[in-house]
Length: 420
Ligand code: SF4
Image (cartoon, rainbow, N blue to C red; front, side, top):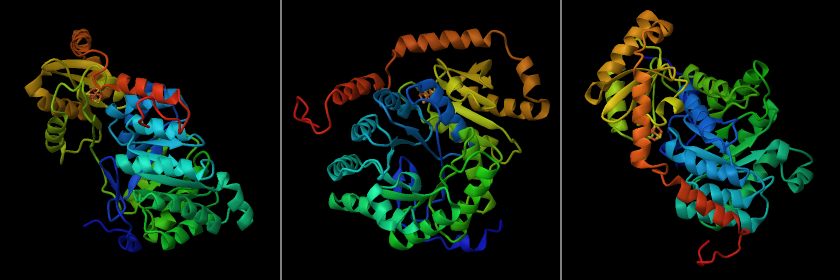
């Protein structure tokens, strides 16, 4: 049996919340988070990065929601994301409300720059009513000025006090699905702040060393802070903050948890789209069958199961190999290039056979043997599916219109129909 890092087994008990389908705290596996660096309004670019992050080990991904176009982007991204999406909110309460309309699975609020109690309580009430959890994300670099003054700086006590004050607003409206972070770029400050937070709150803690910088120094700082705390049993979800491709953050997070024995090692990396209005197959069923068929074989590849050929190969463009559903057919792709079309009932079999050939012959050799007619067939299927189902199968555009109408009003201003 794999040996785990001693003290880690004595994890501090926290209450459990759910970010989408991912449980955080309360004995759930420590999860890995990262954040996109694309403009959230760039839906296809952001989704491709989210898939790459999921493939590298991210369980949850955060996207900024800093402008109306970003909120609209989230309305289009959330139904197609393979992992839960958290909207990062700074300054603008109306962006928090728009992100909720967009269907995000969580919000991150910065108490340092979203300061009005009535606005915080408004967001907390909306989150309570919709069952969407919130991270109170305190950051030493943007600490509330009054707290900074009172404590004479961004001390560990000051960071925890900021979280405590924010939490009081959530308590006032009876909302408990909250996790907390008290990040600093100084490792000793961050470690002390989280130790104190762990004694003060029973909410799940999101660990991170903020603005750690580029690798390797950023990786070392992140690991020094996060691993120290995890080894003490503190922490329920983690994020490395690197000045680098965020895929490196996700990979580092995953590798750290595996190194500490907190997550199982992965050989095969199977990713699957969440399925949405475009899906042409039972994605969950096919993904499960693929997992069972591939498990136990030594296949160190990232393999994707995607519900449609309209968006699948693009969303999973970092995958080594994948299958996307067309009209009663499966389109096999390697590194985004369609190489073969198979019958729907042969999808899993074809996927497994191709995975084994890639391992034996290499990706380039398999790409060279691509069926020349496959790309044209995929394109025909893509067009036919778009025509049959239209452009808005996820009703994203309806939500975008709703966000536009609401953002045209000021926060607190009543809607024409009397609803908020
Ligand atoms: S069905 Fe298609 S559009 Fe929907 S999530 Fe899957 S791959 Fe993306």
